[in-house]
Length: 366
Image (cartoon, rainbow, N blue to C red):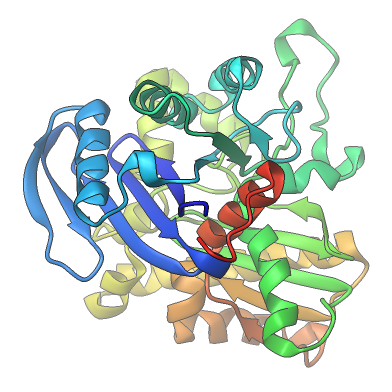
């Protein structure tokens, strides 16, 4: 009888994982936060436990210890599936991790320098701690492999310096999970032309036609597109060049990725819940900006699909902020009376299903 499946999402400051058993039922969540400082480990249903987490290796050990304490030691698992942010052009589907696949993920580090190194560190740690445990990588860019060339290419010349500079798109596992879940929720086929909105600290839109991505708002990196928690979203390249000339590349990168978005506009927080409670003109403007740019860029998604048959929200803001959903849909009334759905995020379960299918593991009795 196979054991449960662990889905692991390793980042720079936190490691999150979810454990899935029979019929992909979620059994447990473990999260290590505050890596590089006085951190904490939280097991679902329990209060966080303070713990020193000086680096990712310490955090992974803490997560493994917490799983073992709950009866899910590594040697009892069927497999580990990793969310990997960037698969480049090579990985357009989940892949069982081999030396070749690992090298491919490493080759994508220049495309996702803040993400892929931490995914690799987790993959390597698991391989050392449990060498016989199968591992699978599920790529956030893979869902957008169906985007046509006219939508993915920037108007740049073919030069060695521009190689790889194109729109990749992200949040693919979330969108793939949404396309699986929505028909189950409604009892009807997936709408032929679906506008999907993944709205959280990171946010993007996706035009899904006949179940496939044909356009998305994020591009070469997760910085582009919508106004986000701390990321800038749409900005003129000339403004970026001017900012770099004023403060230098490292500081410009910090401003664009960690000090902009809702945080930069409000001067208060990148958390939409805090802005809703903040009751200040700047906080209100930040929420207005978020809704405006989501609805404005939705128009480009409608154009990519040749219309729209339904709208679906997912992600922390998309699921829980009724006011933001209403603002966005009100701004899209010009498109007609479209059905609106709220789909709970389930990307970890989707990753587990993909991994099980790829490796031939039957979880009916896990």
